[in-house]
Length: 257
Image (cartoon, rainbow, N blue to C red; front, side):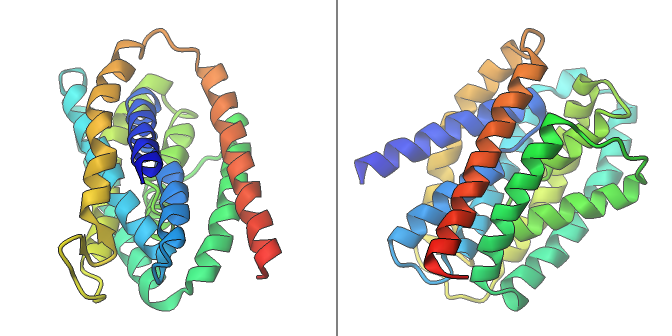
């Protein structure tokens, strides 16, 4: 129990750092750890609890990062980001609803592993696409609602093709605060029977435990914002995603699809 407690705190610290540095909420990492944790407790629909709880943490991370960078964001960025975030939030709510009621937990786990491998390639060598902003919002909402990731790992690299990476991060902080909120609402309102520790598919105590250390790491991330080597960060993040994705797929293969 103590080991899990420490792991959750560590994950919270790392995700807060990633969110502040690159506009990446870390939902992919949180979802994975929570999937393993909830599965070990033999909780039914563990993947959905993992995704829902992850989304709440991601939402809080983006909201706090937006607060930290509030003095560096101009009105034009706010207007564009809010519109993008609104589209993404609506998409996240719709796809979150679909994931809850129409997609089996086993399918979500398999798709999640495939997604991580695709993202590992995209982060290392972002594909240059001339994509409409509205469609970009729908895509980010899809990833957010289905897999519990805020979409920053998709949105930030794509925006960096059009804007300076630091501007892209600021866009992400605003837009994905709304995007992840849409997914959170769909999982919070799921009809699964609420208890003192969960609302819908969201475990409130676990989400709070993960978020607390990010309050510290987000400030650290902002301090090294101008000093970090983006290329090295992309390589490290890509490697982690690939290994985790392969782990999930191999585990599913061993257990049978």
